Image 1: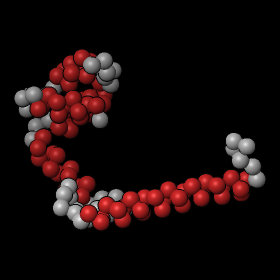
Image 2 (image 1 turned 120 degrees about the horizontal axis):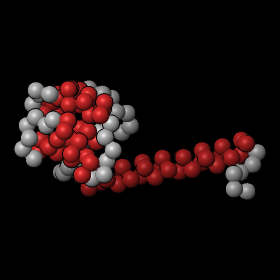
Image 3 (image 1 turned 90 degrees about the horizontal axis):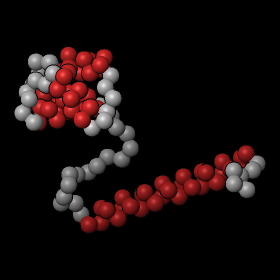
Image 4 (image 1 turned 90 degrees about the vertical axis):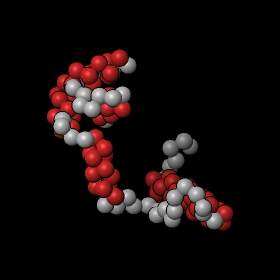
Length: 115
């Protein structure tokens, strides 16, 4: 991830096609050890590609991956005031369930860890 972040940083700085040397310079400037094999892999995968197109393609791929858990009903605003209370109540119920489960697991072993 650090190599991709440094690549993006170099790109954001105006270098449309950062080299391994550019990325290594960025990483070493903040004290990060560089694995040349991983660095070469990132550079070879991104060489000649428009970074905005790569990011857009990645977003499309991630959109198709099921994330599990609760589904969000909306974006950053415009939600009903009562909706937040329901979400908090659900979180509290989950915490209580987890707490009960952990207490039950102590009973199953016949002793508590901190008894």
